[in-house]
Image 1 (cartoon, one colour):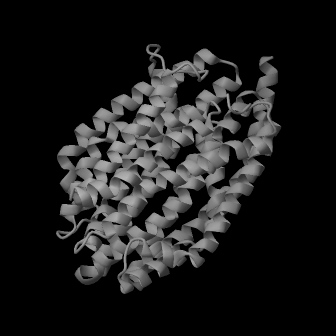
Image 2 (spheres, helix red, strand yellow; image 1 turned 180 degrees about the horizontal axis):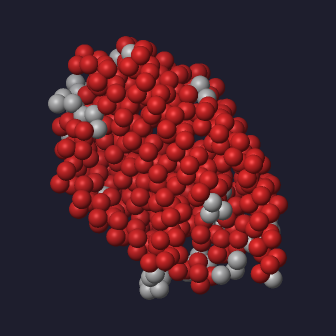
Length: 455
């Protein structure tokens, strides 16, 4: 094991797992950003093609959220079992999670493929952008099994302390994607379909890497066959429902944003504002994906020590994680203002679109530091199996977002929709901090009393 989850220095342990996890998520953002960057520069149709792929983005990520349903649902349970020194239970969780990922991969392709055009039209594609959206989505959908297996199983690599191995699987895919994008898009003349094909090939490479590791001799818990149990699958899905909902609803938020911008922007400005939103969403991915790497990757530390009833280590680890999350989001707040124009320039050279996208980035990043605190509170509760707190806290922030999203444009015009993000990033964390302060120490004390009663 790369890291001793139960006895290593807590600060060093948090950094040793958080930084590779953060870097892995940052690199994974390159999948979408590099695609969009090249697509935005396709001669003659770049802006329309970028808007079409922007419509696909939330749908693709929503499908990928199934990986979190299983991976982030099962890996904390496995960490808790390892903390309890129950290796047979840990193997059973991984075996059932692997089966779930395989089944869901096939089901998604079978269910979504026949209705893809209707989905994309419903989620904001116009007559002009639908051909580009469908071209990208059709190819990407065929690679769904690789995406779900590589992402979902990577959580179980991190859960065993192999954060660097998990990072390498993501880096492998991202590097391959960067190399293949210009070849498929421009050299082979495949356009948006080439961008999707490059992503699928890259995800296949990551999938093979993760499978070889988890079937190999090195990890303490490897993928095995048999021992499937509805009870174990139910526990995985119950715990994974929170991260699944967070990602799924985040993408419903993007879909709703596109629909609102199309409605209130009208035929003249709708596609331009959706293209603008696509650029903003790309920047927000640079914020939220690595942030999720910090708070999600370190769940294994919290889960292991919670399972081992070392509750003071849980609190110590969370303090370090809070500081990392706040520091990262503060840095991104500054970079949004200093380097925002350079980021926007990766996607477009149109001066009107560039000005509008830069303004929207500044608006959407107004409350990044509270958002960092929100991520760790929700992921911290999930790590110790307390879905009854993490799920409502996540839904509260989403509810605030939706209320603002639909109210503001109706009152102040289409551009006001972008203010929904900072409003939810303030009101959501305020509630989460209050719940955390009132409940976390009580939950850990209850865990200690339960452990004493059993011994």
